Image (tube, one colour):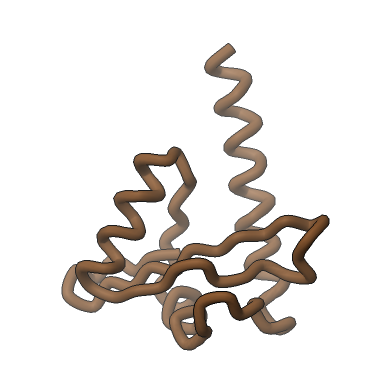
Length: 95
């Protein structure tokens, strides 16, 4: 998740393994230069970046390693489904 405002840019990286995790968890979080590094690393690793200021603001209050709270399950699930769909489309195009 990332915000658009350069000076107050926030980025939060989530990880979710349905076998190991009870919910998505925060694996990186930062503001300003750190946010830029998180976004750059994601792009270099072909990890999709979703921009949502409100969600990024909310997720930035969580600690690294903390699972997202149940009230965010639905919105994060929608994003994960979108990312999965994009990965499937990308793999079909690159064949």
